[in-house]
Length: 314
Image (cartoon, rainbow, N blue to C red):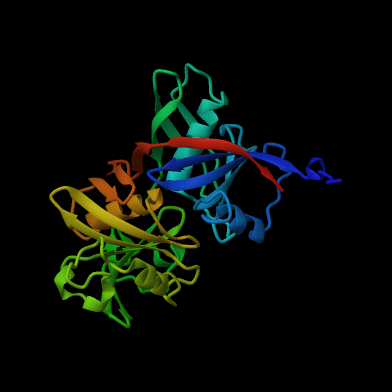
């Protein structure tokens, strides 16, 4: 006789959502009883043996009365993250589509480790969230607050900042601008792709941002001594279509999109005089609209999509 022991196992419902291919496993944890180990997070996010995702988001109650809920975001490697731009848009969709927000409302406040984030949104014909604009707040530019060990080499509105500071690597010297959007980012603009070491490209005959070996160079800079808490590493190239960007996310590796990275890149482009404050950021998963507004806040607009739901047998 075969015994079925599945009734003795814990069943946890989940939803899979993504923002431009940056994908997340959502779990309702309003009871604050779901405690995941690092190994469980890595197993859930594994794209071959698990559900597959860039991270896990636990939907928990907020201690802030102005916030609908708190977004507890865990990277795919099990490390806790302060903020995720695509994740918080998906967080808003999760809440709106499940009735946590009144049908007459078009905005909400989400609680995060980086503080409350106000989100305005548009609904589709069925009342579900289609796109959202997140007020990401002011960018953080002071080196010690990002944090980075690089010395400030410029100022913005009397604030010390790191702009195009050179860092050596096995493939030559790269210039990084450092910005925090609640999590640390280092942005390198590839102004002259032909000047780079040809070994950095998967296809040496086609030197482009798309053929850059990001797994290799991104991993090197992510863990560089210049970034004591590691950093999200963005490489960007500007043309008439907008700012093209690829990102090696701290704790994840390359992702198809990064909302905080898009915001940081928009700020870095403006600070270094390469572009204005309002740009289309073109990522592998699609485009985000980012505006560094007159009040100093960075506004990010983009879609959020639910892929499927399921049950994890723990």
